Length: 116
Figure 1 (tube, rainbow, N blue to C red):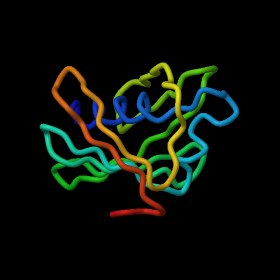
Figure 2: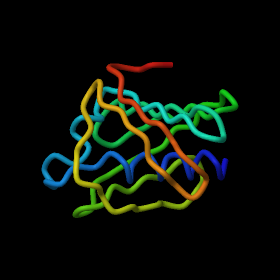
Figure 3: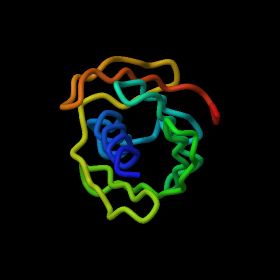
């Protein structure tokens, strides 16, 4: 569960927009896939407040997300809320990249709809 929470925190820190009004707008209705040293994690954003996370172990956990100023805050399962400062570019379907983190490189991609 801790790895799942870290993956979600990583995802939201990666995918926020510079303009507060647009933070997370490209996520709603779409899936973010994270591929890293611990496997593949998928995060589906069905609406502007809910997420469903499918961990590398195949387990699905419901959570919530919200915008707080220039931060995106998530709560997954019974983990406490985690707020992370935004980066400069909002995600859109088809966007992807690689982010270097403490645990190594993580590739991310945004796909249309629920991708699991």
